[in-house]
Length: 298
Image 1 (tube, rainbow, N blue to C red):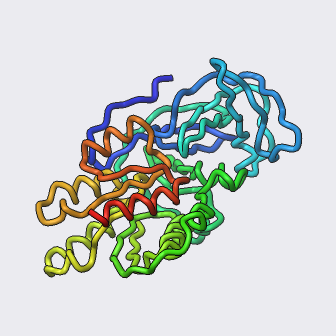
Image 2: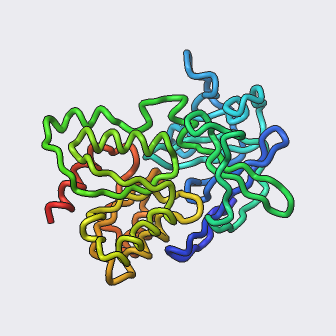
């Protein structure tokens, strides 16, 4: 199935692939998808996590197959259905689903962040909810699903220890990240690396409003020395935020680092076109600190 639909840069839109597991509709950002293939038998892995069905080798590349039905606590999948092969965080993973419905183009403004009654920030595997033609589609947090199965695939916070002793600095850094868990991990890592003055925003819109407030008050150069942004965020994504910052003469001097699980070759080109100063994949927290050092030293 073709999954690539051309999107202009910085429009605050995304494509969501709707798929079905156990009769319910779920979604995934098309940017995470490499391809969709018919289910093929897998080889079980001894002592693997219960959600790991096994491994298989399409085109001579070994892929781990994840039973999404098991991840959603709806039993075990049976042979059949489809594999959605994804690529993010420098990992290629196949997710076993029952069926694929189609692709919807939506705005990040229309994505509802799950409330506390639906999912807790730390434990939930939903990043957003959309309603299309009266149908509710739950967008799943595939990064968290993989991290729950294997924590080593998440942020490698131990990389900060390898940087050694560092001096503290009050240089103000603004970070836009919608995941409260990841936001805390990133902020804790930056503080451990000596960056004490972190301003946090839950999405691109909140970050842009803060920048505009500082710009209009004439305090921007004191309040924001660098911006770190995720790509996938409700209300305003990181590409739209980058475009706004880099297209405003009063803010374009602010270094922008895109720190996202979606930094692949295609996304890197988009970020470069929008003027991002650096782009890193989310596991690279040690490299993030090094890039911050370099950009601020300029």
